[in-house]
Image (cartoon, rainbow, N blue to C red; front, side):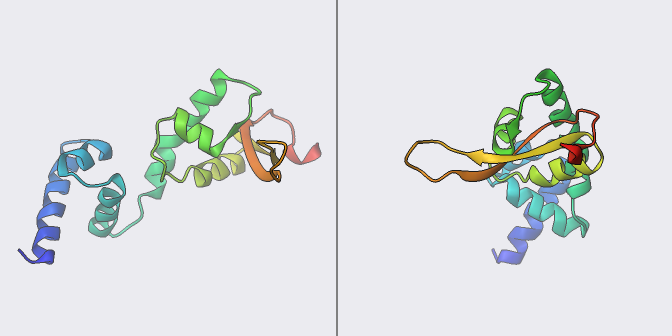
Amino acid sequence: MPTWERTKDRRAHIAELVASKHPVPTIAARLGIHERSVYRHLVAMEGRSRAPQVYEERMPLVITHLEAYPGKLFTEGELRRVLGLPVTAKLRTTLERMEREGLVESVPGFRDDRAFCVPRPVTRWRLASGEDVGSH
């Protein structure tokens, strides 16, 4: 079967599963492909980015987690793991948009794992305190 026919069949199957309200991880598992491949096909089929939907899905999850731990700082990677997002998920754009909207604030710092390694810059995130973030 030519590649274009396989792609056409796969996209038809993805469209059926999306219409049945199956989540992307389930679709990927059923088809035996990576979640990112499902998103790539959806973008090609719909002709637009799915980024706005990603924000609407992830923002409430981040807020709920940060509200459970007020004042605690989390890196993007820690939040991604806690929320059960795939390693390839780009949570930073969601966090930056939330910061622009005044929901969270970023705290720059350094990561120092061991005494013999060079400290690396890292950004940690927390719920917005209601104060002007730049006034510190």
